[in-house]
Length: 257
Image (cartoon, rainbow, N blue to C red; front, side):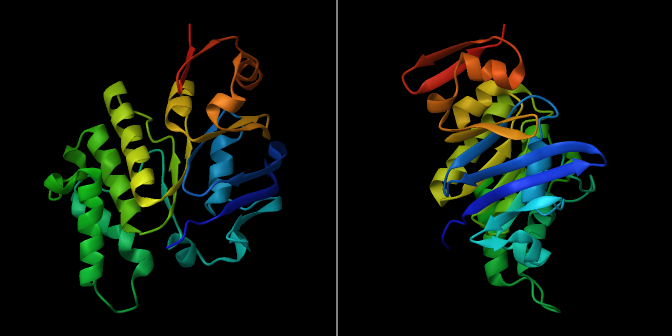
């Protein structure tokens, strides 16, 4: 399956009379990890919701392989793109494997149970995310990191090449934040995924992204590889604070003090 090409054209969106996005245009490179970054209320999550059909734009469009996603049926879209939300909702007594199996719903035919291919994909997704050994455990018994991996496994079970992650490290301690982002990068590289995620942590965005898109007041301020587009002035423009930006080889970080 080829990687999907995602383009946003002149997107506008308001909540009531409050403008949130003001003419956003961008293109996501296939088979990369692209992170939306910027200060609170800059429009990151709203843009992600528009790109995943959870909101409709006031103007502009989101194109997936040249098609406006507004004209793609939700089930068809779910065969092309998977979404992991900031805090996945599911009953605490639901076993991990049952959660992961939900990822096969977009591929199900009417009146047909899961096939051997479905079961194989579920097994693969759990192995890939490291939750196969807790397949029978209830979600309510899991740590935050285990729970996040289970929802990632559900997304992988959808068998898409486009994966959206809304703040995947929220509510996790630093160890599980790093483990989750390392897993995201490994999965993307190993399986040719196009990954778009929202992150609040600047250093995580710089460390784990092939490209970053910096939003300011509902507009794209900058886009490109972190080392090419991020410096002290850009950080100030995005966040309104002067922070030192350091580099060593291909590593880049800010000093948040």
